[in-house]
Image (cartoon, rainbow, N blue to C red; front, side, top):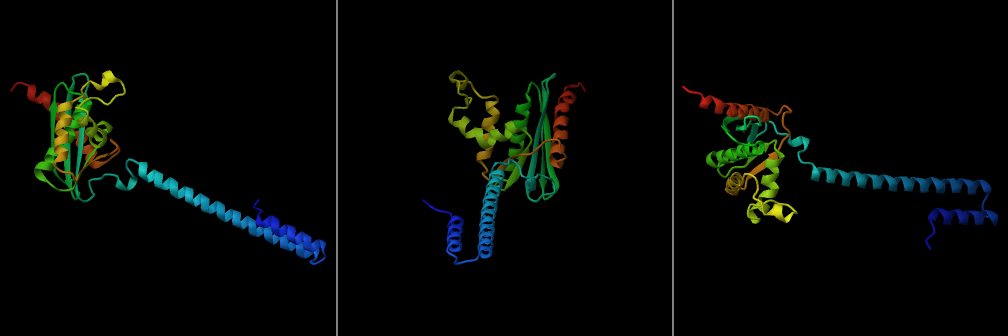
Length: 237
């Protein structure tokens, strides 16, 4: 059985005192010193354990955080960045898409459009598709980041596409009947998959919408203009 050092030292001092080999005051002073040293050692061990736990928590947070504050998208960051956004009006089933292109803080291109009988998710994916087509047509082989505020579009590109492709573009569902159903907007996703395969240097990233990010706000405005353009085009001359 292991005996703590503090207990062993106290026993030895007590025996010496009983045999008359040390004075009572010396014994008390030595005992106080042993207790103080033992307490300091325990505190140092507790601090080291707390530091290790703090470092582990920080690493776990960094690994799981979807968008860290130091990577917050802004139009004033260097490199080629695109912001894609879609919109949809349920009552009329009209949707709009748009993307804006920035290079080294300057807007160099933008485009938008509208589609009838659409859905919000379809418009978000369409916006990404049009942004990818722009990159492959005007900046082929270059590093680019395409930002979107749609979890559906971003997760589809980064996580679901390979599974859908292997599964014959069927739904991912534990229900066998549901697995036989085709995913929503399969033609759009197949087109996105093709565009992504042409440039592995393109990154699809999520950004929070409507929080003052310049590119996201600009794309949102253009997407609404693209939706309204359907009505303008339908008016007789």
